[in-house]
Image 1 (spheres, rainbow, N blue to C red):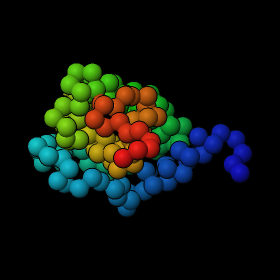
Image 2 (image 1 turned 45 degrees about the vertical axis):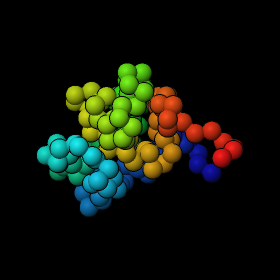
Image 3 (image 1 turned 90 degrees about the vertical axis):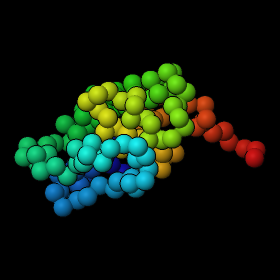
Image 4 (image 1 turned 180 degrees about the vertical axis):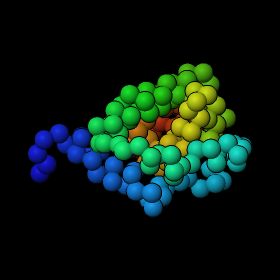
Length: 138
C-alpha cells in the first residue's frame, strides 16, 4: 500500500532512473525507424548531458507528462488518424504527423506499439482502424 498521491509516487520512482546519467532508456531497434534520417534520430538523444544540469523533481516530471508530452502525443495521434488513416501503414510514418519540434514522439510511438498502445490509450488519442483490435474470434 502506498500512502498519499500514488501517481506522484510513480513519478518519484521513474525520476530515479530519469536523473541517473548511467541509465540508458530502452530504444526501438534501428530498423523500425524506416526512412527517418539517422542524423535527425541522433538529435533525439535521451541521454543528453544537458538534461542532468538542472535538478528535477517528481512533480516536474509528472507535469511534463501531463502538460507537454501527453498533449503533443494526443494531437499527433489525432492528426495521424484523421488526416490519413495511419499513413502508409508503417509505424515510423507517425513522425510525419508530429509537430515540427516534437518529431521525437515517433520514438514514444514505436515503444508504445510494443506495449499494445497503452500510452495512446492514456493520452486519449484514437488509433487508426487497421491498428485497432477486438477481443475474441480469429
